[in-house]
Image (cartoon, rainbow, N blue to C red; front, side):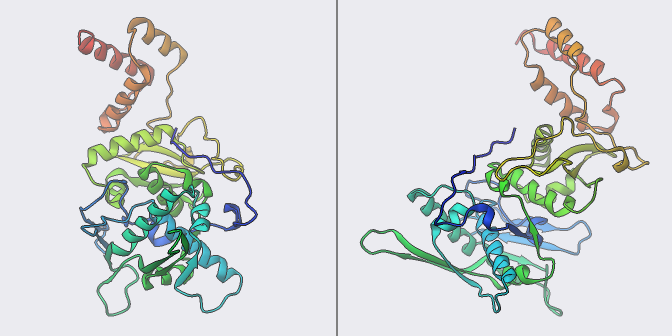
Length: 369
C-alpha cells in the first residue's frame, strides 16, 4: 500500500491540533501541472497546454533552488486554510502577509518539528519564492498572461544568541491570494493527504479531489495520455503509465477508488468517491476489495473494461505454484496487467486461463536464466 507516516495523536494544548483547522486547497492549482513531483532538484521547465489549446502553464525553476515541489505546496495549503478560517470568522481586509510560528505550521501539515525540519521549511519557502509561473489562467481582460511566484517574499526572525527562529512571515503572490478569495476557489481536503509520501500519489489525490470529488457515483474518467500531460512529470509516458498502473493496483488513495478502463488504444483512469463511512481523523478509509467501475458509470459504446478487478482465484494460484514453482506470482501478474493495458486487443475472455498461459510462457522463456 502507499507508504504513509502516522499522524501524532497527542493533543497539544498550545498548538491548534490539525483537525481544528479545516484544510482547503486552491482549486486551480489542483488540476494543472504547477509543481515538481520529485524531491530531487528539478531544473527542467514544465510547459503545458490543455488539449483544447485554451489554457497554458509554464513553470520555470531557479538555477540555484530548483522548482517548487508538491511537498512545498503544503505551505500553500496551510496558507489557504488559514486565510479561509479568518474569512469564516468574519475578518475583513485579509492580509497577503501571514505571520506565524514555524512550529505551528509544521504541526498543521503533519511534519516533525526538529531543527532539521525548520531548515527544510526555509528551503521550501526559498523554492516557492524562486519558482516562476507564467499562465493565462485567470488573466485580466485584455491581457495575454500573468507571471508570478507562489510567494512574493518571506522572512525568518532568528534570535542572535540561540540562532533559533522567533517567528516567520510570508507574503502571498497576488495571483494565489486572489484564487483563495474568489468564489469557489477552495476545496476541502482530508488531513490524511499530508501523510502520503509519494509525489505522484499526492498529485493524483489532488486531481481526484478536484475532478471526482463532486462528480457523483460514476466519478470522473480521464485518458492516460491526458493525465500524463496534466502531471508535468519528467520522463517518458510509458514509464508514467507503468507507475500509474501500480497506483491503481494498490487503490489506497484516501477517500477515492481508482480503476482502469480500456475504451481505445490507451487506457483511461476512472476516479470515484469511495463509498465508505468517513474514517477517523488521521486514518485512511478502508479500500474496497475491488476497483471495478460501477456498471452505471460505463458508457454503452465502447464498453469500458475494468482492467484490475480480476483477482487470481485459489484454483489458479494452486495450479501456477504447482506447475511453475519458484516465481513471484504477483510480480508476474503485475507484468501481465501492464501488458494487457498496452493494447485494446489484449483483453481476454477468461482472465484466469490467460494468466496461466502468460505464466507458462514466462517460465519457458526464463527458467534457464
